[in-house]
Amino acid sequence: MQLKKYLYHIKKVLIKLFIGNKNHKRKKELRKIKYWHHYLNENYGYIVDKYLQTEVPITKSSSDYKIWVMWWQGEENMPEIIRINFDSLKRNSNGHEVVLITNDNYFNYLEIPNFIIDKLSQNIISLTHLSDYIRVALLSKYGGLWLDATVYVNSPLPIEFNLPYWTNKWELRESEYDSYNLWIGLWGLSSVPELLITQYMGIWYSCPNNPLFDCLNNFWLAYWEKENKIPYYWTTELFLIGIMYDNLQAVKKMIDDVPTNNRQSFNLRFFMNKKFEKNIFEEFTKDTHFFYLSWKEKYLEIDPETNEKTLFKYLKD
Image (cartoon, rainbow, N blue to C red; front, side, top):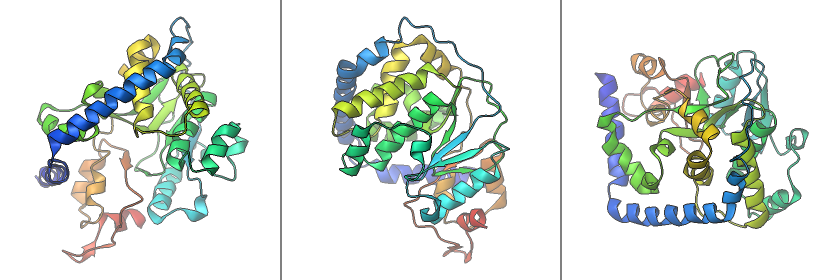
């Protein structure tokens, strides 16, 4: 019953945040995403076309995959919540090598073109944009598991995934459509398949030589060689789901074959500053191993309402 109460609280928060001017925002974002989808297809669809007649063998998963995570400023400059996440990853790596990509070592793993480095130094490419490129480049070249630095890992990672491609993926229950539609309306995601809001690219596994990431890598290289801005935050997802998924059968099959997993990944963040409740935490974590947190939030160690330690304090300890 307590879990239901907390989930109801989440829904109220979402409604409070996003219900205002919903229709106006939805129409505005819908126009934006339709334009951006058309632009990407017209200017970079040729990259997808290269894979239409190519049969790329899908390699089975490997038990010695690397885990990739990026914090450009280095481990010593991690904010507290990022360090907590990174420690949780190392603690639960299950024998897999954890590679932290930083400004001081990226060249050991990738040959990033000068035009990308130059645009980064000119603040044309942000660190978020750079991360979008680096993750697909690493997975294209080496395979392995990519985790955003904002992901908290609650239990040991699998020895192998037994799939060529894997990501965090969940299904919407019928009762959840209304609340999720608030997010769809806000970002204009209703013009693309539901897959776009039922999986998240902050967790990505790939076998080596995967055409999905090879195609994404070539897209970002072509994009940043030509462009000097990126007007839509969800460009990777839009190109993958809105263009590649619709045109490449191998990509469609890989995405469709990922089973539902980690349904509670976005819920823990709402309770970081609330009193730690063991039974609630166990309910969240019984079938969810990855949790998305935010490094921009201010986290408290003591719940001001109960004067007891918070979930954040529990994870920190």
